[in-house]
Image (cartoon, rainbow, N blue to C red; front, side):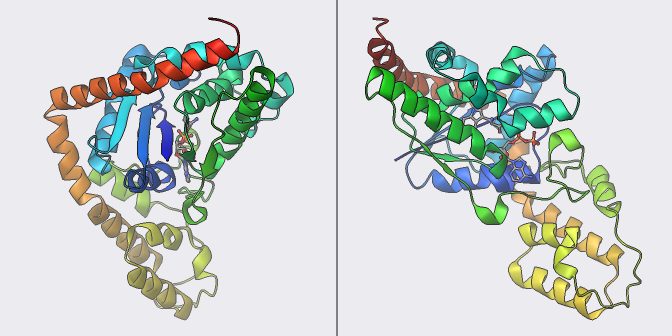
Length: 321
Ligand code: ADP
Ligand code: TRP
């Protein structure tokens, strides 16, 4: 079984990225042949600062390795180091109906947020399809917001197979319902673009301040809160605290007597402790960047060895040989 996923180097990674995509991906590296990459080509649709892209890409590499991606088990590389995907994207784009892309929620959301779109942003799902199909991927672990893109990939693959003969494996998205949409500080989905994130490796003081400033309602500490499970801090606590701790906190809110200040302090402490070992590992990696670069170089070589023959297969099927 081949498992593939990618993450854009578009800013500091946050709890939504970690619980929605990275942790499932890290757990899956035990279950099959795992391939994970830094989607730097994708980041070009919305980030136009070259130095920032370079820095973010290294940060994603450090973050992912620190969180447990094991280069002995998973192939890990930077998308642009396996440029075959851009060639395959052209083969796929000619079979992609405009309407299929026009219906993509992620594209429509960006338009709704006032972003003036470039062609790359519109064609983004086709490049993502190439990423997935060029590795004969079976399973694609992602958060809920990427599900539609994997469905577009399936549609394109089916169409290619019908037009040019059996060429591509049809992939399945894998979405863990319990972490499909981690809420942000303002109760919308946590996302870089909403400015409502808790970063995985945020600076201590700034992150504590962010957590303490989460807006709560005006009920007094003594008032019972029968809707405790809807509280955003409780929801986040469930991700980083042991289940019995989260349950106890929820019960105390329900009964009345636990103030919001103490609740938020508890969230910060558990968050900080949860990531402590990974923070230490990240510092170690940051002082050994040669190792990190070597992991990415070797990953690109191994990924290229898988992608090359699939591209050749697709070109042959399409009469390009
Ligand atoms: P962002 O919304 O911050 O820009 P990305 O779109 O780069 O995040 O997402 C990278 C990965 O993390 C994707 O697989 C996405 O589904 C997942 N992800 C992002 N935010 C969340 C969230 N709040 N809950 C669950 N998964 C998320
Ligand atoms: N679009 C994904 C995101 O923004 C990143 C991505 C690019 C990806 N190519 C992929 C994810 C292939 C899974 C498979 O999060």
